[in-house]
Length: 453
Image (cartoon, rainbow, N blue to C red; front, side, top):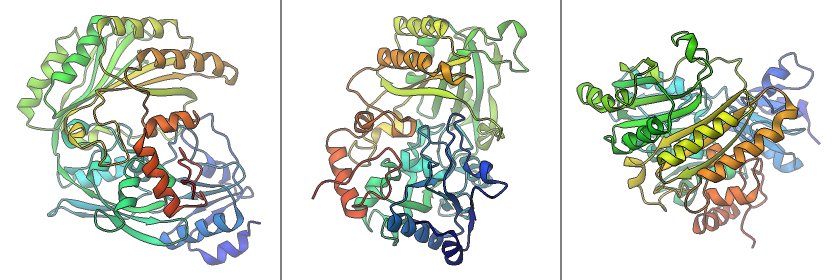
């Protein structure tokens, strides 16, 4: 039985219940189709609050959702009838510019951390959305604008403060609880609640990058991916193939037509960056060219807090995008009836690929391209149609063994979670889960159940 008055006496943070005027705001998450009503939202003030909330969930058997930024594609940031442990008030940040390290609490967003680090000409790589919480993206892996130059977010993780299922606070790093340190680097929220993370900072001051819009054709798309693979590893790219949105700098005649809306970031010398970007500009006459030298934090523009997309999304890995594959992508996008269908392609490799596959819980270091297929829509009754379209195209794009990135998984079942953690990775995670969370208190996630016995 949940006792709100008792919990209120035990914690420093705030408890929000259905009787509070800001309850609906507190329970909302990024994905607009998720509409769950937790019994309470607890906005923790510190690690001791986190420990007390975990104890309450464990003692009562209540479902516990852990929210950092609320971007979970599966809606795991909020519970139906359970407790939401909201970390958004944990906002401490200590930057040691001389040693190039930072301790960050997990209620911070990627954009907030990046802006603060950018004042020192330093950065840690996260994803391509600034509004994600540090906790969620780091524990999932983190694939963004610096992935080819500096690796994944987990490759910059030096240590973490983690509250485990028994309520204990552990300092976790390569020497202390190394099994848990291995597991949280890509294993998601299965093993505890990270309240603070220590990151390595890289020298990333002025980059050359921004947005480049190209007309979409099979030759342009295939050539874009080929150029991204051949580019120096200082360059990371995210190519969104989609109908052009009504952007103010885009001529009206192009609105709604298929484009390659790409984000590029060259983390290195400006002149070398201009040379690296030249082949992309030459693929076709750009519809919009916003590439320029800029401070790295400008890759994260201000977020629209009212934006809550309703979408079906699935991810996979591909080995290559040949012209025939590119033609199939464009044809499929043309057939989609979604309000906004998108195929997002991220060329990997570089620093990310040099990390051994068994060094972290992210086991897909050798994959060349990450593909994410999305259908955004307006009415709930449309969902089955768009889900069939997304699933079909993802199956067509998938190449090699079944695999997935846990940070992009929706509610897709155990088979897909196992695909994110193949073979020995799954077995090792299950053993570590049994050691740190044998009762599976942390189960509202892409769950790895504890190993039997």
